[in-house]
Image (cartoon, rainbow, N blue to C red):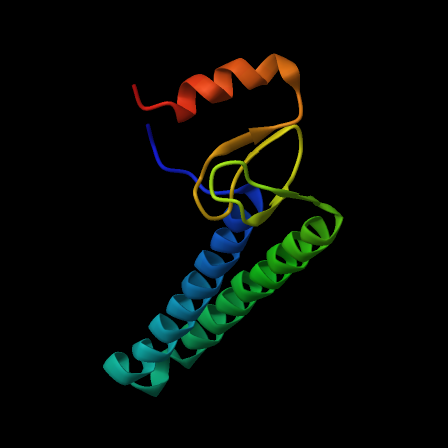
Length: 117
């Protein structure tokens, strides 16, 4: 089984990835000036704009994750006993990765996936 995290943490992870990608693109654009001189400043400008767009995308993802987090249902995980947020009918605990659900149709499947036997 592939280890997954809760939906809110997945959104935050993608926001962090977008920040790192945006910063990497900006650094590559600036490194072009160092390696090829001032004749490629136009290329650095394009890379800076693309990096800024990626970072603005991460801001949008973080904002969306924050809005979802405020509307998520908070419950106590039956495995670890900590407070966790649930989005949708099934989600995972933020701490122990236990599958949590409100839907009785998924309850048996979630128990089988959590049971390592």
